[in-house]
Length: 174
Image (cartoon, rainbow, N blue to C red; front, side, top):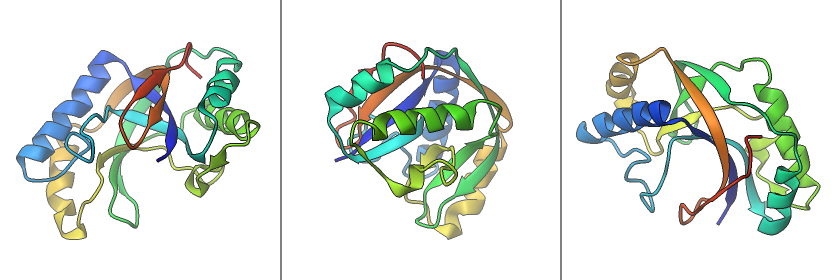
């Protein structure tokens, strides 16, 4: 089980990504719509914690300065080595700094940060298909490139238990 610190999207952006998930599912690809517990929401993860005290993490994040909505410009498709296919938002001013402040806050609680979320290593992404085979990439890319580019807005944040999908809203955007 892991705990993720996530940015969640406004209703329009959420619906746009869910529509893309549905299209890919209809084309035979597993997306976050049906992956594992099926309670995934479109999100951008700032930090994934392997061990943590959830109360301390929530307190530390609540103590960070409130940040306003974050405009994202999504204009690319990416794929990690282990077959996770994703949308890539541009790293606009402020995004990397916000992620770094979140990581610093959670690490001060003693939480164990997954190595892929260290500042300078972290790759911001919005997951589409968690188990995509390389041979399927052209078909997925064709569907994705029908909707790219688009703007999205992250307007809230939550702690997400990745094993169940349980979300704990944070009091303000970080």
